Every structure is written in structure tokens, then in C-alpha cells.
Image 1 (spheres, protein in one colour):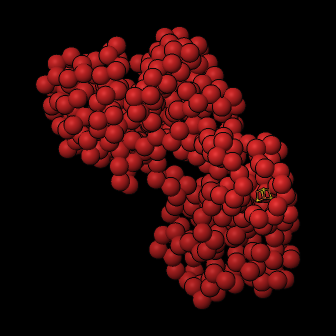
Image 2 (cartoon, rainbow, N blue to C red):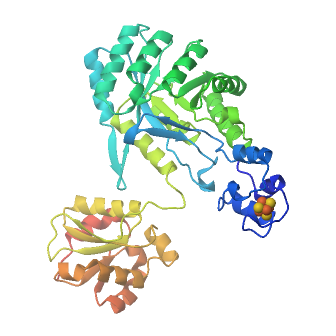
Image 3 (cartoon, rainbow, N blue to C red):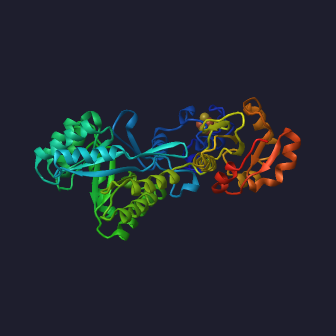
Length: 445
Ligand code: SF4
């Protein structure tokens, strides 16, 4: 938990010598709490206070990196329990189990399907992140075969799961450059820890209770492991969910360092729909990696959408660039419609325009990323702004008419907009779903 200005002040020399450039130690402490200045600016702070302040300034949850390069998955480093308090920083990694009991062609087919789980939503590409390779057969050679197949068949990040220390060791060496996450269901944690240490890899630490996990992370830490991911071995779903929440709360609210690591969850339902619901529960409470079994696109998409929504900054709406968009093969006689630059609004409108098959110009007016009614109520979608957007877009040179349609919800802006822009304003439908009918009957003259 971050220290307050007063907490920091208690650790400072309290001489008010001004050498830091601040009038008092308290003013310096306040600036330090707001991260406006660094501690080394005070030459008089004691080594003991420095150590306490530096340890307190570490994030309550460790950042863990799995994989490398541009596909690397970073998880953890979260600072709040609830998204609206600030934001969640590192989206939950979504992945799928692959067992070494699969035949090579089955493994390749499954990998191919997993690789294709990529979607576009509100202008962003959303995709899955991980494959978890499990040594289900308990045969080292089958496991290593699967590891080689996955290494060639996917750029996604990899989790290696085996009870065999030998199998894990060889697999870790094979994939060292891919920085896999190691996981052993067995009891030889010391030996697996040594493999993680030797190859500088993150490690899954498993336990039934908070206390058991905390003891294991402290032990692994003392053996040189800094990046760990926690797994609760609790068969009851509601108790398991409770443990995930308690672990997050302990790390963030009580600054319990041994629990300050990201969490991993494996789904238990076999049915794709139920599994998706279970996975969404983990994403919301508070798994940093979720591993599923089913790879049906229809059930994976809602999960990825839920993750995208939860990890969007609540203070920063997803926006599209405010400009003119051409949908279809537009001509000088094509309709011109206006909406706001809130991504969900824009993509809902553009989706309906596309389905109408009427080539149309859409002017996304800068409304600071708000939806139509919100922006209008906040005076961010006004006649002045729309008139400005029409002018700036250069639409006058693109069409032979001067007719623009505005959303039905802001019909009240029509008169003033006509006055300011010189364009004839048409009141379009309130809901985007009515746009196809509106556009099909639209005429330039
Ligand atoms: S330099 Fe250190 S001791 Fe002096 S006023 Fe600043 S914080 Fe206080």
C-alpha cells in the first residue's frame, strides 16, 4: 500500500533545512507521496529511513513477465481492488490447456484454432495470450514432443506443467528463449525452484490456503525466485473465488508481501458456456491468468470482450480519431451523418451503415470520447462543435449537397446548427439500428 505524505514525514529528519528545495520536510513528504520528487533529493535522510521508504514504495503486487518480445505477457502490478478507484493495469492473460495425450495432428489442429482466436472490437484487436502444455501422459518424451510442436506452431506464450522434474528441466531448456512459466503439480518444489532459478523463469506456487501459499513464496524467494504466480488448490468453486479475493485484498490492503504476486486459475466446467461464465468470474475476481479447455470462438469472444471492458481505463473512454470516415464507395451524392467519437457509439453507427450498403460519410465529432446523450448533457456535443467538425472535415469539397443528419436524441441542436454551418440539418433516428432504413430512403435533393 502506498505511504501517505504523513507516513513519509515521520521518517524524514524534520530539520526543515530546505536543502531539498522545499520549505519544510512536510512539503517534501507531500511531494514525495505524489511522486513529484525522488527521495535522493534529501541529503539528510538516514539509511534506515531510506530502506523503509524504498521497501514501502515497491508495488504491492509483483509484475511478472511471461514470454519475450512484443508478445510477452505482463501480469500483476495492480494497485486497486476496484477498477473505478484508478484502473487495472495489466489485462488477464487468457489461455488454453494442451495435453500431451493429443496425437501430433490433433495438437497442430488445436494450436491452429487457438492461434486464430483474434477479434476486432471498437477498433482494437483482442486476442488470447497463452497455451498451457500439460504432461498428462506422464511420459517425458511425449511431453517434449508437444513442447517442440507448440514452439513451432504458435507465437503465444507458454506454461509448462509437469509432475516430473526431469521433464520440466528439459522442456525449460528447450524453451528458455520463450521464457515460459513453470508449474509442477508435484511435491518437489525445491527442485522445480532450482530449475526456475537456473533459467531465470517465473514459477507457479500452489497451495490450499493463504498461509500455505505465503510460506511457499517466502521459501522460493529465499532461494532466489522473484517472479511467482499463485494457484489455489481448492476444489470448491465459491471457496476458491473467495481465496482469490482474499489474496488480492491481503496484498493490496494489508501489504502482505508473501501474497503480493499475480494469480492463475484453471477452469473446471466442461460445458463451453458454463466454462466461459466461470472464466469471466475469474477475470473479475482477480485472476491474472485464466486457462480454459474449450476453444469455441463463440464462447471465447464474450470472455475477451469482458476482459477488454474491465481493463479499459474508466476515466478515459475508448475513442476514435475525430475525423471524417468514408464507409463504402462514397460519391458526391452520398449521405453525410454526424456522431460522436466515443468508440462504441462510432462502431455501432458504422456497423449499421455498413449493413445498409449505402455508401456514407460519417463525421466523428470530437466529444471527448462521450456517447451522444452524455456528451450533449456535458456540452461536449454542441451545435458549435458539430459546425466546427463539418468545416474542419473538408466535407464541403467531397459532396455536391449540403445536407447533414444528426442523431435523433439531439434534434434540439438543429436550428442553431443550421444557423452556424449553413447546412440543412436532418434529424436522423434516435437508435443506430434504424439507420439502414433512414439511409436507404435518403436523397441528396
Ligand atoms: S532536505 Fe531533507 S531534511 Fe531538509 S527540508 Fe528537505 S526533507 Fe527536510
